[in-house]
Amino acid sequence: MSTLTDQSTRRVEVDADVFEHLKRLFGEAQTVEAVATVAAYNRGSRFLVALAI
Image 1 (cartoon, one colour):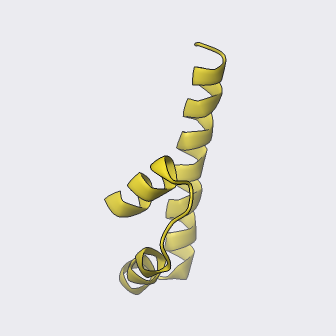
Image 2 (cartoon, rainbow, N blue to C red; image 1 turned 90 degrees about the horizontal axis):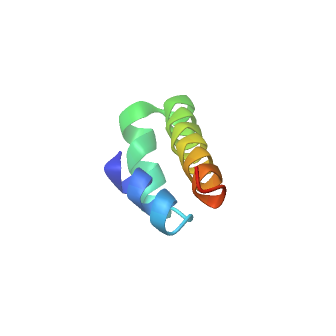
């Protein structure tokens, strides 16, 4: 899970092998939830930084 977070936060793109590993561990639905959660936190962080809050 930390690889998903690191790649999504630092590079935006996530390697296909990371997705495949997560899908094997958690299934497709939970993998989508994990990606959505990371994206939401990144969005919020970038919004606050842009506004200097």
